[in-house]
Length: 376
Image (cartoon, rainbow, N blue to C red; front, side, top):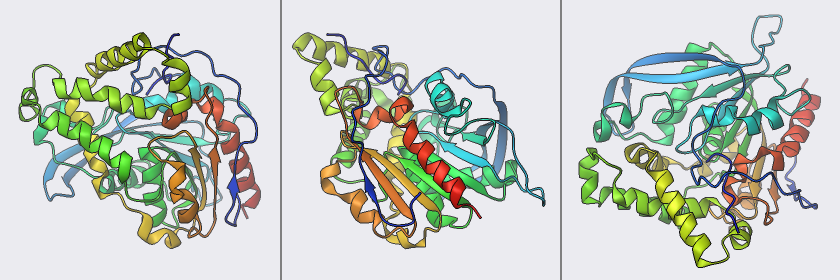
């Protein structure tokens, strides 16, 4: 049986929702096992901003940091000239804003009548530091690039939004995985800056347990490989190409893998394809991106959040196990929050259901409609 991989890589009270119906099977997607690259499918305006003398979490300073960003849609302004319909779109670990501009998202989220209809919203996409067309280790510094954390990522996102785009307020932040974790951080650090956040497959708690172990496993597999050569490798380190299949496996859903990997041949093909995909990614960039999560902990200040919150997770997400009850417990402390844990099926993709918005876009649409209705 062929393996189907991921296509790439408002309620004011505490409420739990679940999906009672099984979504239809999504279209078959290519067996690339490379979930971090995608072709863009919407028209955008592309920009770069350069920040000078940027100090990172370990105290190191880069003379210049480039952040790439793009916009789509038409800004709407109030009587004072302030843009009122800006939505910040934040990508996941190891990808870039291109992934959120791909055909899957364009067709499901941004078209006429869709939840983030470009005729209604002004979308802002940012390549985080360490990713995409922004400054990153593979640009030349390699392992001399300063270690960055999620706090650094959010700081540079905020500077881009306020200093480059001159936005004074965001209508919403939509973040996926790492981007969702950044959305939680935004809501605490800048509580009056946005009307709402929509974190998808992102818990408001420190990374721990299985989620932490796999990150350390991949990171140490790279660092302990002699061919990594302190970051100065000439070919993809074997520690990276051999550990990525574990990374790739955990991205997927248990029911989906049970259905699609039924024998040794299928398992071997999955491992082989994932290892091949790893050779097309830069090990230093992924190493830095994985280790960046070490300073993430929004759990201490959830009561500070003033924005409306809609958190979406999936029951087959191996990164964020639902049996731990972390989302339910955390959301009790969020003043204006609600969440959905959508059941996984053999046709969903675990954590990487995020890359199949056709399976969850209606949830976002319902929340945004309610948010518009709640606006003064």
